[in-house]
Image (cartoon, rainbow, N blue to C red):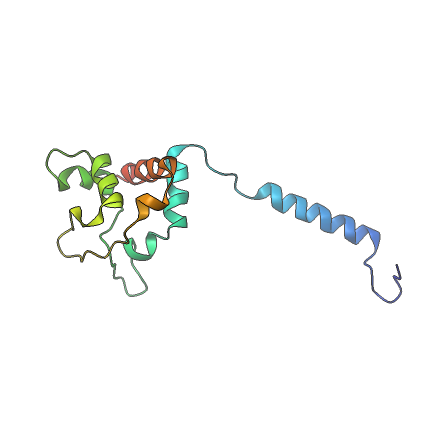
Length: 128
């Protein structure tokens, strides 16, 4: 352990580095346990915003989801907002919003756990 040549940092620097790593690890956001918060994480992880939020030119590939919790209940007669959102994730082509193409990725339901699917539906239904 030769400090003069700079091979090892001084002991206080090592201790401070370990403290910094510990503080960063503790500051990391814990996994959400509440369904809406978990659903927001799923939405972000799936990168849903890349199609449902405006791009740099203000365009969207998919319909806006800002108020989907309210709008969803009006899209299919007799279907609740939650059921409509769930169907849209599991079977995107079942109803295509006028003015948009059927471009939603298939297989999301297959790739999500039932808990994450429920959380995603809860999150989207909360957008009023």
